[in-house]
Length: 133
Image (cartoon, rainbow, N blue to C red; front, side, top):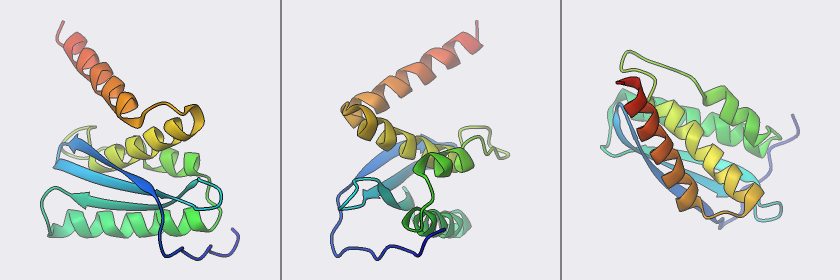
């Protein structure tokens, strides 16, 4: 990996709210001011404290360090996708991975990020409805 890019004093980004098995999770993905590529990830639970919040903060720091050192954002998404726990597949890390995917899809297509999130929620609802049929 290349040396870590210094963080600018101000950066734009997206904060995405998702529901996980652990409750609400907020993922902020900030963009590099020169390339508009994701460069940082911040993860916050809807409720403060606990081991889960500490683990999420550690993961966010590692992902951010990787992104600022040359890690491809799609590789970060792949690394966090599909991690399950005793609460099922709708885990905190899957929500973080989805948030990164939403930002990447927005950057690639120019589509409104809220529309992308809404479409994913509808697809999830339809998939869970079909599970019961």
